Length: 79
Image (tube, rainbow, N blue to C red; front, side, top):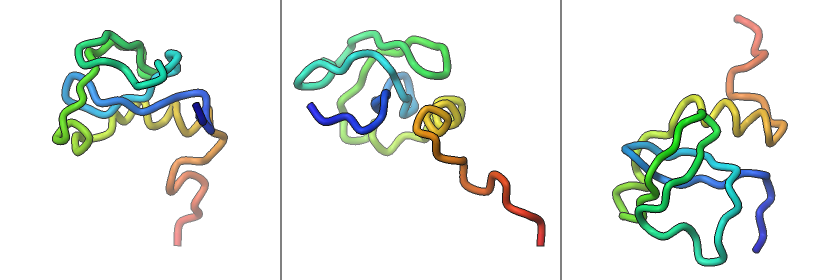
């Protein structure tokens, strides 16, 4: 399975989290406990609404670091 970064996004416990756990071929079954880049463990959710949940800010920062992509606004000079 194609995975351009060493993490995947997965909704769980009210937010979209990033995880470095190895992704099963068909994704994580609902209710699977996954470790997240923010250091917590969440239960995987597959509902349509879950993908609209807010992105976990700590996972977002860690995912940007792993991808080697600066956070938006990082390094911007004041105008």
